[in-house]
Image (cartoon, rainbow, N blue to C red; front, side):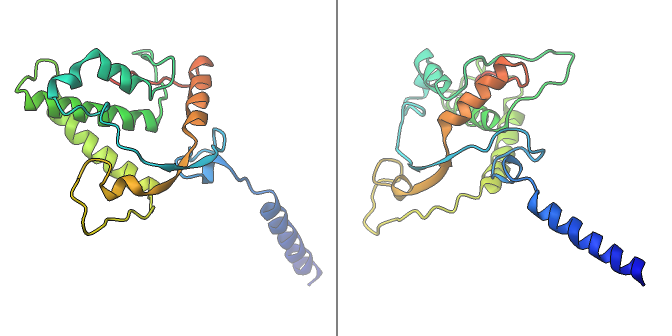
Length: 195
């Protein structure tokens, strides 16, 4: 009987101890690594703004050095390739940006009926990106309310309701600084946006 009581007391005390010292942080942060690696990134309220310099209306402009340079402003300094013969670790956010960029490049190449400047597997690449981005969007689960007025006439520009919403976002500056430290320390490889 006394052994049962002692076992029960020990179990309760261990449970209390575990609850008091359970880890919090990156592993519980949306968009964090499930292993708990990495910092907890602060958040900011961000109003999305239309910026067509990332998606020029003229298809040829998407292949310009200016457009590529604009997309590269979203990437951390130090992007490059890992060793061909070794496993390396990149990051989901930059993979997602790569997918959006490549989908834009593939779309505009097809609009121009020019595929020689596209990856040889452009069809698979495009479909991979659709599925990858679908899952990334579902993972982040942004439930910000977007008001759409009855008299909206602009489906893409500043009058579209999607541009009026405020979102709770990770502080992108903190994300980039973290990735740049990881690249510098050799922990992570971030592939170029146009790989």
